[in-house]
View (spheres, rainbow, N blue to C red):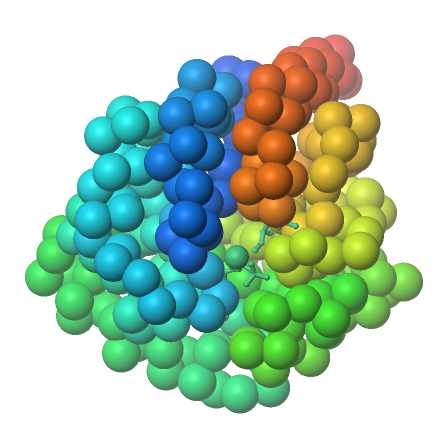
Length: 254
Ligand SMILES: CC(C)=CCC/C(C)=C/CC/C(C)=C/CC/C(C)=C/COP(=O)(O)OP(=O)(O)O
Ligand SMILES: O=P(O)(O)OC[C@@H](O)CO
Ligand SMILES: [Mg+2]
């Protein structure tokens, strides 16, 4: 399967800047247009999705695209999270769900529409990490949460995902998580698996974002922070890019 434009764009940013910044906009958020306006100059991509969504996704996605002029990637909470207005979609399997609906059936039920609408699928292993069990995604996705004290289990899922041919793994603590995915889990995953690692859930300040990138995160996602305070996006971007370049320097000086 060939790599599409949005995925190549993300790979280029990661190669040149060491890390990319994805702002999650929940289409259920009433002030999505205001958020889009405020983040457009600082996010690299906008990911659009909600874990319990009843909204006019076509219009909202079109509006966000027009306002930001950034690549939009769907982050579907179910088969109703697909719209032709988006540039790409995380074709995701919730790898450690107890219910096969979330590991294989939901994406499969969506794949023909994704093909028909010409949306670029980005294969992604979506991996739920403690404290995801206390968040909407953990509940809806019936996740068998990986203990935060067991980074090697998270890393094992990333290696497995890479052997399944996935190019992206999303270590997810859950939207609004009390604490983010551990840096040890990120570093262990990057050490073990040749896969791009997205980290999201509970990242509320630039210092945390900086640390997660230094430990290996290729993409940082913020949703709650930038929904509540879109202006935070500027210092988040600065921290992510500063860490990204530092990480690249370290790698080239090996
Ligand atoms: C690829 C296709 C068509 C479907 C995949 C469907 C799968 C596997 C979904 C995984 C389970 C799930 C509920 C994912 C939701 C991901 C998401 C949009 C998280 C963000 O949720 P928020 O809306 O920010 O959380 P709150 O509801 O707490 O605000
Ligand atoms: O809302 P936050 O906690 O930033 O989490 C973002 C994303 O990982 C949610 O799926
Ligand atoms: Mg939400």
